[in-house]
Image (cartoon, rainbow, N blue to C red):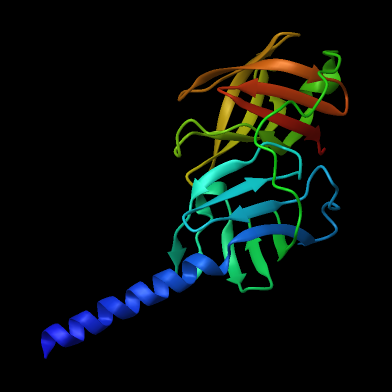
Amino acid sequence: MKKMILLSLLVGMAIVSFAQKGTMNGKWKEYKRTPASKAGVSNTDTLFLEFTDDSYKESRSSTMIPMRYGLKFVSGKPDLSDAGYTTVQSSAKELVVKDDDFTYYLRPYQANAIPVAGAIFDIGKISISDKNTSGKWEVYKRDGVLKSPDAMMLRSIEFTKDGGGNPSALVYMNSMGETKQWDCSYTLDDKNLTLKSTDFNDSYKMLKADEKETIIARDGITYYLRKTK
């Protein structure tokens, strides 16, 4: 009798797991974001997700190179923590996820496959000035593929000065679904941005810098940053 009960439970779990695997397959596109007062949704900062049975891709543009992650379900909902999102609710018609800043509402959509290779921007001018090293700069999209699932991804940089008036930066990074912050010193020229903390000494190649946008690259990932304050 106990064997029959155990077998029934295992079969039931397998059916649930199998059913979950197919429910999200396909492409999903953000159609709404809250709180709306923080920022509008543009075609260069729209969340796209694409699901298969055992993985999903995440990008912030229909033309950028997506990040791929393994897919698992927790309490019947897709776990997107590796990409930095918490799933609020999911169904065949709507997916709602959130991060530290926004709640994103997505619907299925039909479109050509998200490209997985190719340059998507022309390298712009590099014009270093005080405007590049003041205020907060946030990553609004990324290109590339993570080398390992626990790799740290740059999220934002806030340029300040320390108690002695020396250049410093408050740096936020995402890793394994968590956001961490570091106080860093930095150097910046027309070739590299170097961020140094007690835990890392990372150098990013400068691809573009002006008063509106900065593009940097490191370890196969290209980061697009805009000044937010």
